[in-house]
Length: 114
Image (spheres, rainbow, N blue to C red):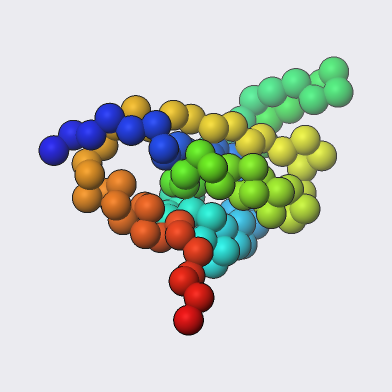
């Protein structure tokens, strides 16, 4: 049942609040750039920004998509992202079930012309 596949990946990002994360999720789902988006509850991020250590509440977002759609998804998300330098990182999916991959594939195909 387990299939090796590099056609798919996660696009990971973080957002400062749940509302912005939901707007981003709806955008990529509605445009068929992702099959599913998981928004994780608030977490604390610790990092340096412009020489100062910062601590901020953020929401982690995992976007399940095809590798071929990552650049378009980023292009759509970047303008609505409130961060000066947003985190957009791809994470590989090395394998999974064929049925799940078929579903992701079907949800990320553009509508067929009638």
